[in-house]
Structures are given as C-alpha cells and as structure tokens.
Image (cartoon, rainbow, N blue to C red):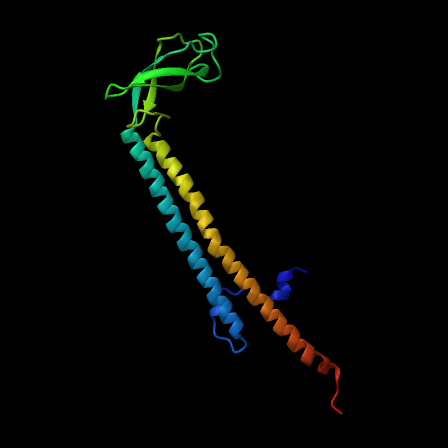
Length: 197
C-alpha cells in the first residue's frame, strides 16, 4: 500500500492554516522555512546579478583598453612551417617576440606564433595600456556568456548558505519536537493499557 494512504492527502500551506492542534513549534517552523526560502531567493539573485555585472564590466573595459599590436618574431619558432593541426589556423608554438608601444618603448615577451615562423615574421599580439602582453579580449557575445555563467554560479553558491542554514534550523526544530514527543509518550504511554478499577 502506498505511503500516501497513511499520511493522507498533501495539504499546501498547512503550517499557515488555523488549527486547534497546531503547536507553537509548527508556527516557528513555518516562519523559519519562509525566511530561509526568501533569503535563499534574495541572496541568490542579488549575488548573481552583482557578479554578472562585475564580470561584464571588467570584460567591457578590456575590450576598450586592450588593443592589437604588430610584433615581430625574434627567435625562429620551433617546428616546421605549414604543419597543420586539427585547428583551422595550424599548429601554434611559443616563441619570443618584440613590439613597440605608442610611446616608442620596445618590449619583448612570449607569444604563440605559427610553427616554423622565421625571425622577423610579423604577428599580431594584444597589449594592455602599459604595453604588456595580454590575451585577445572577449567579444561582446563571449563576455555576455561568461558573465551569465559566473553570475549563475555565484548566485547558486550564495543561495546555498541560507538554504543550508534553514535546513539546519528546521532539523533542530524537528529534533526538539521529537524529544518533546518522546517525553510526553514516556509520561502518558504507560497509562494507555490500564483499566479503571
């Protein structure tokens, strides 16, 4: 026989209904659950939105501040030219490159270039305002995806805190209710088998 037959039909919001058998613990549990759900929702949404905006703003700043610069290969790149890998632009390897920034100062660094590139071969690299090498900035679509993903993960993480706290509080209330039930049963249970006499 299904368990539902023993419990009866599920009644929505039963903790909020008037009932002469409703105990103070039932009312407390109702408020704890309501508070936990509201805090879970609020913390998740606010933290997720804040994180998404922060990431989106940072990536937008990168798109504005970072710019491509033509650099030249300093040391011949390892590998042989024309070797193709699974990617459409062929195999790329790390080698030393040099470039000049707007103020005329020369910089060098490691960049990925096509395999077998000879010294002096021009390659495009991305730099920040100080002239340091950076990765290509995310496009607007990539930035939107990243910010949504990070915002969702941060929102879920933030929502977990009040959710778990609510579960812990509810568990404590349940244990206290069961302890009281056991005490009452221990006091009144032995009297059930007696007959008046």
